Every structure is written in structure tokens, then in C-alpha cells.
Length: 80
Image 1 (tube, one colour):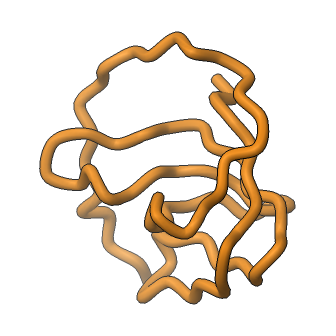
Image 2 (tube, rainbow, N blue to C red):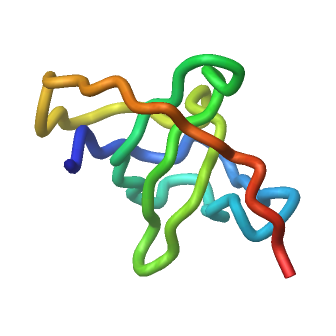
């Protein structure tokens, strides 16, 4: 479920393939707000790329849904 859209406040290059890269000013669409051990990360898309990013790098400018559903999350995927 698309939760919100925001604008990147600075450039971000993730450490591996689990993360989505973006440039300052790009639109970022948020699908998941992580909880538990990774509360600083959200998951979303920039263009056709999808991945995690630090939530503090996004300025929210539109909310699509206020509904939240808590699901277990594992960000330990291995990149090849």
C-alpha cells in the first residue's frame, strides 16, 4: 500500500542492493515504515527502483494513507 510521497532532502547512495539511491529533490514513494530493530529505515521507490532508505532524508509532502499494518520485517537479504 502506498503510504506517502516525499522529496529527498539530500543525495543518498545505499551501501548495497537492498537500498534505493536518490538525488536531492527527487520524489520518493513510501510503501513501508519499518519498526523493531530498523526504525530508522523506510522502504519505497524512486522511479522503477525499490529499496530501503533513511527516513530522515525525506520531507513528506503528501499522505495517501494513515492506515498502518504491523508486519514482521527482515532486512538481512544478501546481495549478489
